[in-house]
Length: 129
Image 1 (cartoon, rainbow, N blue to C red):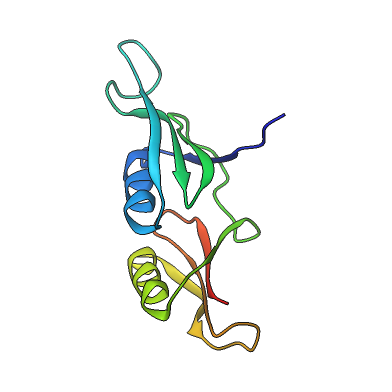
Image 2: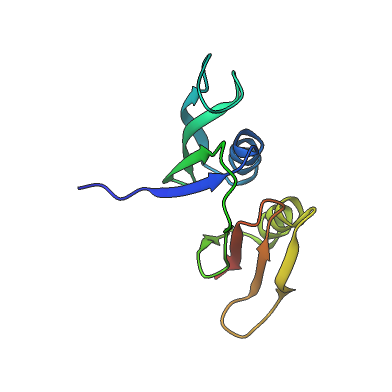
């Protein structure tokens, strides 16, 4: 048995996987399948990508269908950083055009912590243990 995280986007999957792999250390794209001629999505756009994000395998799907739901903060990526500089860089990148649920600060349970929704609505908890 294998369990893999699955994120569904509506037209922005390639932008998301690129941002995540460029921002989170030890991340890279594993493979990409693109929509072909006659398929539901725009030809040449990402249909499904698999990426290792900080060592966690994630499937990223680009739905050609609009859904009445989106991401929720009840699911989030939890990232432990190795330094305050790394935390600051990740928070700066992921918060651009996003919103904070908890701005960067000391909440007593870690040295430094931020919780945010990125520009796609995906939730991230960025922590310095």
